[in-house]
Amino acid sequence: MPDGKTKADEVPDPARAAFELSGRLVLTGQYEEALTATDEAARLYRERIAARPGRLEALGSAAPLAYVMVLRCEALSKLGRWEECLRTASEAVALSRSQQADAPFAAPLGATLMGLATALWGLGRPQEALAMARESVALYRRLARRDAAHRPQLANALSLLGVVLSRLGLHAEALKVTKECVALYRRLISADPAAHALGLAQAVNNLARRRSVLNQGRRALRSAQEAVTLYRQLALANPAVHRRDVAMALGNLARMHFSREASLAAAQESVAILRELAAEVPQTYASSLAEVRALEDRLRALAPPPGA
Image (cartoon, rainbow, N blue to C red; front, side, top):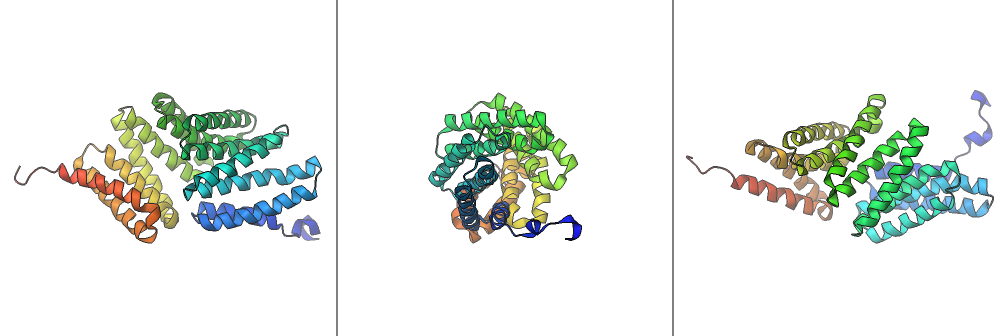
């Protein structure tokens, strides 16, 4: 065989193909289609596990199955189907814990814990979500100390932990965690900008919010401005996915500007983008549009009277 390949290397793997398709669909915001792909990938991996009862053989399919369930959970959360998300995430964590003695399964456990934290938060169970988020960060921290390849996963886990802490009112700890997350993403993006641009944008946007809550106004404004710039760059490459991100970052910026005129301009641009998106998918964007329009109305009301 040329290039040292064997016939086995060239045999298509339908389970992996469905797994990779699931990831692409989630990444591009095609969540309903992603559910179909994750169903197929999960079915194929379950069949392999049932057909290969030996521990090493099963492990080779159990790890990707756990990641498939994480992708499914992410798609369900984006669609607001929280009960299904919780069932999927709980099953994924149980599968991961059952294999935890195997070192290769530590990373899938961290990912499934993050999925479970997201589901619990979506169902209004914040303390349980916090416990899962903390466990995920602790696990990835240990892995990243041994192998730098796990740093992106640690950054992602820190991002989630910061969000949960903030929403629970633990603002000082949330700021500390989010600063660590941003610093880690800055190191990661210097090595691979394309892979980590979205993570950095999200982390910087979160940092703006953390600073604003703690009355660090000028620092919050600088972070909000940077987040808008980062999201605009992402939207140039993939507007279908990142236009909403730009709109929400602009809304965030509008709340933090010291200038009414600058705040109003940011709010107006945000409304314009969200109006277009709501026309396409009303059930997804209507509430965000209403929120930013209310902000725009408040800013207009602050205008000085004519001749003042």
